[in-house]
Length: 81
Image 1 (cartoon, rainbow, N blue to C red):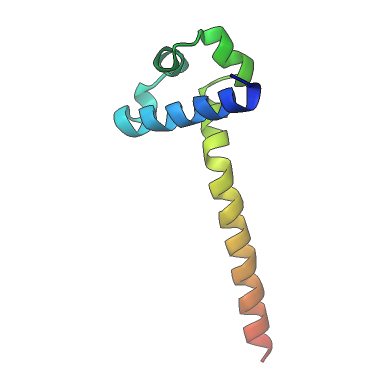
Image 2 (image 1 turned 90 degrees about the vertical axis):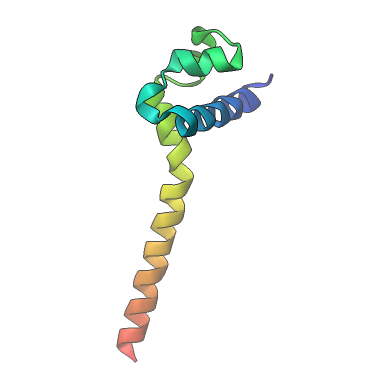
């Protein structure tokens, strides 16, 4: 597996496990085991579980931030009229 595809596979597996068992119940060892990779391989791609969670949520935060900025612009423009 190439680096980018391994990172994406880790994220996908983590999401599946988090949804199935809950975030608190899943460790990086669980994710590595589910992927049949060594924990060291997982740590090559992500420093810890928190970093995995940040990468999962980052696109959501970016979209939310854009929506807030758009909403503020719309509100500001509507209040000027």
